Length: 92
Image 1: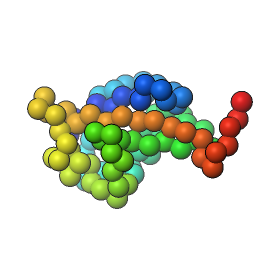
Image 2 (image 1 turned 120 degrees about the vertical axis):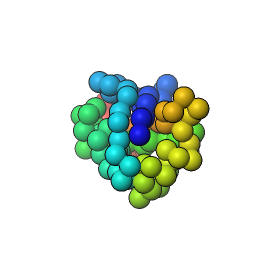
Image 3 (image 1 turned 30 degrees about the vertical axis):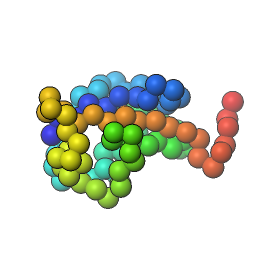
Image 4 (image 1 turned 180 degrees about the vertical axis):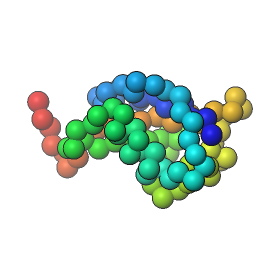
């Protein structure tokens, strides 16, 4: 499955080094979030959220199911990621 991942406009998390991914059908959303987290080298106190059409999918959902339900007519699934400090912690 072909997926394009873009950072949310007002997000303070780092940019991904690549936006296009080929993802196996049996990967869960949670596993994909882990891949994104590693690629942007996100610190432990930061959370990351991945959205499909402005909706937060279940981390247990299979990427294949999300793809089939939400893929664009160009054949890509578009995801947006964003982050925020967990527990309201603000480290400046």
